[in-house]
Image (cartoon, rainbow, N blue to C red; front, side, top):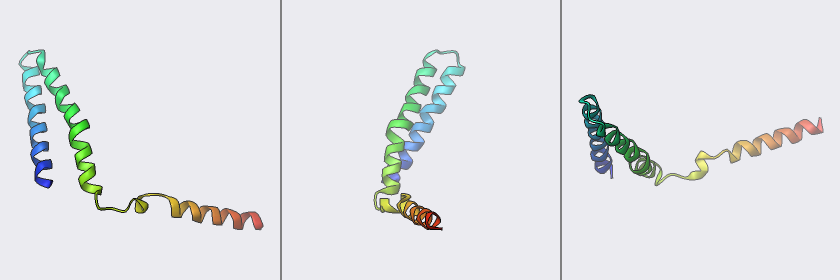
Length: 81
């Protein structure tokens, strides 16, 4: 998966660079190529990257459940005083 992400990232950066080159050459299709590169980053690369990074993680570690419970306990203690 890591090699796929690296290949995809390099390919997308290449598309973006090519799009800017075409745009600076005066061709109006450069903006379309840049847009395709940005869409590829947003809808292909980022979901794969996020999946790769968090596939074996416990979601409970990234929530504020424990903080919320501690805050509620603290508020109950404050109300009693």
